[in-house]
Image (tube, rainbow, N blue to C red; front, top):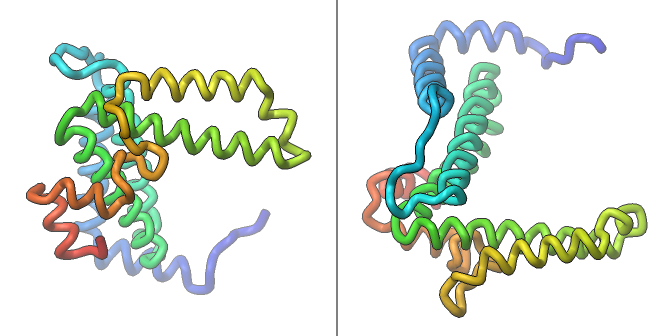
Length: 195
């Protein structure tokens, strides 16, 4: 496979590297600091209210944020600003999920988050059942395990919790953001973004 590059891509990368060296270095330092915090030593869950599911949820979302942040940096280094901008929105939505879960009743909200994910998986499995090439993967056993997983997540949720529409238990992303009014990060992103 030959060199896959756009015309003048190497020159653009060199120019960006010179012009934005300080900003790119700051991005690298921030990324490395967060990755180091997440990967150094062992983590002990010792705070009341934090259980394994909540911890795993936060580590998963932080890992996703690190990967997205790194992808943004790589795209910026190469001059693909519009593509990086799309991922900035993904990063901000991920940050909203973290803030929303941790803001109030984090154990409950982590379960709502996962119940929504499980609901999406069940929808996908049902689609597989209607697709001849995939039908064999959506076995009765797999469907039963998914249904049981969803039931285990939702059994302790308050009656009427709407986990099917959005991971927040709200109707949509905008409603989740509204619940964060007053949070400094959300105020900044609303002012500078397109929430």
